Image (tube, rainbow, N blue to C red):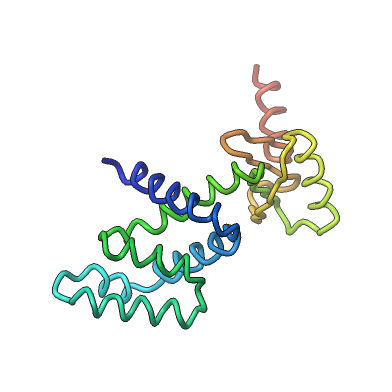
Length: 179
C-alpha cells in the first residue's frame, strides 16, 4: 500500500476523532508543529526509527516532546498510535492529508501568492477577497517573494495558476513579436 493511501487513512481516522471533540484546528496546528520538529531533528528521527531501542524508551521520549510542547491529549494519543504502529516517519504525509481533509470540511482553500516584492496587507486583503468571490470558499493565503517575476503577482490555487506577473506579460509580448 502506498504511503499516500496510508497517510489518508490515518488522517481520516484522526478527522473522525476530531468530529467528536470539535478541536480539529488545535490538533491540525499541533500536528504541523510536531511535523516541523520531526523534520528538523535528525536525532529524534534516528532514535524513533532505531529497532534496538525499546518501545518504552521511545514512548518516554515522545511523551517528553509532547509534554514540553503542551500537546492536547488527542494529538498525544494519535502520535502514540503512530509510534506503536511504526508509522511516525509518515507524519509529514499524514499532517498534509489531515490539513486537506480539514480544508475540505471547512470549505477552505489554500492559495500561494508569489510576488517580486513583499505585498502590503491591504493588497493581500483585496487579493483574498477576490479569490473568495471566485472560489466561493474561504481562502488562506501563503505568500512568497520571487524576484524573478520582476513585478506583479502569480496566484496558485491547487493546480490552477493565475499569472499577472510582468515576466509573463513580457514573455507573451515576445511570443507575439516572434510569430
